[in-house]
Length: 307
Image 1: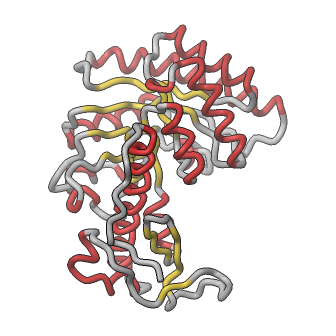
Image 2: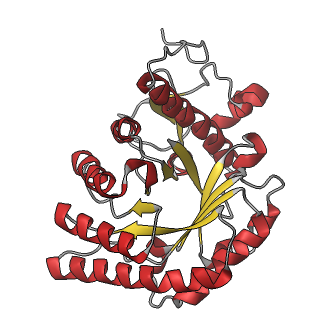
Image 3: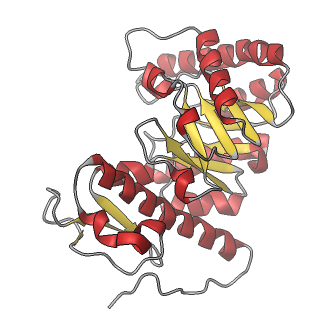
C-alpha cells in the first residue's frame, strides 16, 4: 500500500528530506504555480479537485477550470505516475437522504463530464483519471462504483469517510474494494492506525493523509514502535494530554540534525520540521504493517526507547 502525504504551498517540502515521497495536492488557487518551487519533484502524485475547499466557498469554478489547474501541476512536476481526480460533491455536510443522493448524482455527473476533458488531452499512459466513489451506505457505494466502471474508469478513490467512525470507515472501504478491487482503490484522508491495518490486510492500493502536518500544527509529535503521540510541553494543550518536554531517540532527518527544534512551538518553520518528523514515523507504522502482513519479522530498532 502506497502513502501520499497531503501537501499545500505553505507546507514542508517533504521531497527535500524523502526523495521517494509521494504527494497529493489540491487544485485550489493558493497551490496554483507552486509545485515548480520544489527542487526535487515527486515521482508519484495525485491531483485532486479541492472539493473540500470549494464546498465551503460561495461559488466554485467550472470543471474545466479545475482541470486546467491540474494540467498546470502536471507541467510543473513531470511525475512518473499521476492520477487526476474529477470534481466530487462531499457528503460530510449532507444531513438528509435526499441531499446525500443528490451529492452522489452530482459526483457521477462530474465524473462523466471529466472523462471528456481528460480524453481530449491524450495523456501518456502513466497519467490516469481517478473516479471518486461517493456513497452513504452499501447500496449507494455499489451503485456509484458500478457507474464509474461503466463510464470507463479503472482507478478509483473513495471519499466522504472523515465524518464516519472507525468501524464505518472500514466497512465502506470494504464495500468499495469488493466492487472495484482493492488493488485499484485509493482511500482519501483516512489514517487511523486500525484503518491503516485494515487497508493493508485488504491490499488497498494507496491512501493519503495530511495527519503529519495537521498534528505538527497542533504542537504534536509522533514516535513509533510503539506508535505514540505527544503534545510538546511548551504548547497550550490541555494538561491531561500526554506531554513531552524533550526529544526521544530518533533517526529522522530533523532529529539527526537538531532534535530540539521539534519542541519550539513557533514560528512556522518549526512546525514544518515537526511535520517531517511525523511523516517519518507514520511511514514506519505503515511499513511495519506491510511487513507483518507479508509474514516478516519487524526488527525492533532503538530509535525509540521506553523506560
